[in-house]
Image 1 (cartoon, rainbow, N blue to C red):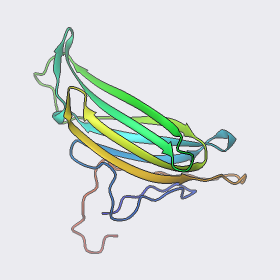
Image 2 (image 1 turned 90 degrees about the horizontal axis):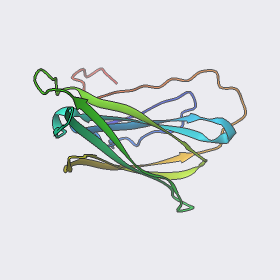
Image 3 (image 1 turned 180 degrees about the vertical axis):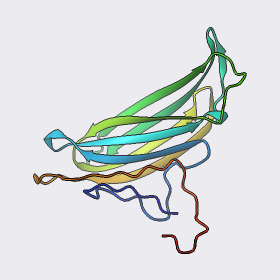
Length: 169
């Protein structure tokens, strides 16, 4: 299948035929936006399947944690732009009546200079690290023109499925 994001500037396209950490446990995608001083904001959108996270008893109820190891490095300079681990907890007081089919979703924002980057991501259940998803993506951040931007749009999807409609694009 084909996964694409578009902005008015058409900054990047994820290659046809590839997916980016799309499985039942973890979804991730990203978008790039112009920032001040000719830098770029990368927004990383993530979603964990709470039904696959292991809840542990604590003093106030139960807690599960999705973890993301994120490494974004500049391909040519070999410098790490970002090398961080993010822990995203979800707490509940009682498991009775709790809908574990919910998704633990969020967004991470980072600022990068222009360059060629490789993004490596590992998402895992903090309480059971064997439950994980790993993927990589490459992207190029160029300099922006000084012309005024008049519009922008972004398309988000939590899940992409093949259409049965033969006339669908």
